[in-house]
Image (cartoon, rainbow, N blue to C red; front, side, top):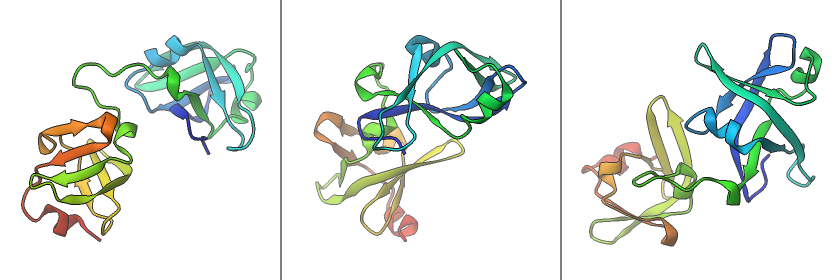
Length: 174
């Protein structure tokens, strides 16, 4: 469990080889971000202070992200890290590029239709293949996150205006 105020960059999947290297599932756009931050924090629980891990190296190998931490030099040490989230403080998150949206910023946004009627609030986000889905708190409706469906996005004020195809909420609800 990652405490509020932290961002997960990757999750450790399994050891790679026998020298402490780990295959990770990236939650960021590229392996370069892990090299940039140099250190990540890991939590045993949301109520305990984080442990800091120093990233020695991060690279891609046959479409898999691999990380090597300082002091993790054996398969047993690497195996002990299986399943942990590699986190940074939310304040250390890079700024989005022009036109880019961080999916985590969509959680808590109120979604209105073009007539300014509230459709619901984004409760969660699901990624299924290449499609991202926004789960609204009303009827558990799923809305595909397609930038063309959201002509107005005011993220600082947590307000999205959606121009959804007719009947989409009814089909994707419940």
